[in-house]
Length: 128
Image 1 (cartoon, one colour):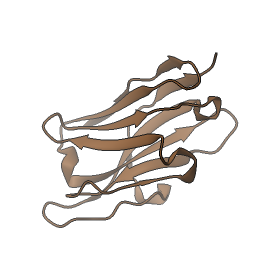
Image 2 (cartoon, rainbow, N blue to C red):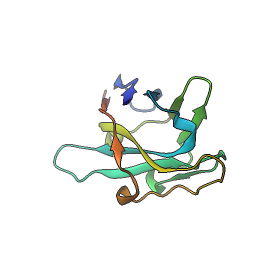
Image 3 (tube, rainbow, N blue to C red):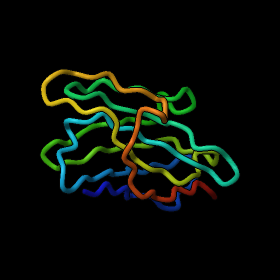
């Protein structure tokens, strides 16, 4: 079982990146998924999450309107499209799986405590 985040890099302020969270060995669509980030010297914070069985998402206030989280069940991957990036968005971004459901929808949470399986992160640096 593996969860791997990728797509990070160096981008100028105002630029865009798309992060991927790919699962192998299990089916990601049956789990709530969260994106989190941690900047040097700061605590990890939730960025966004996506429900099971629906496309409903939640975002932390600082990224609302700029970031979009989606699923591609055929690719067994969750994406985080990040636009209008700011230097304060610089951090290591990680994805994690939360609650499992085969049939019922489950609302996701931005609480880190709701997530139990974490993948390795990808570095995002926003700088001119």
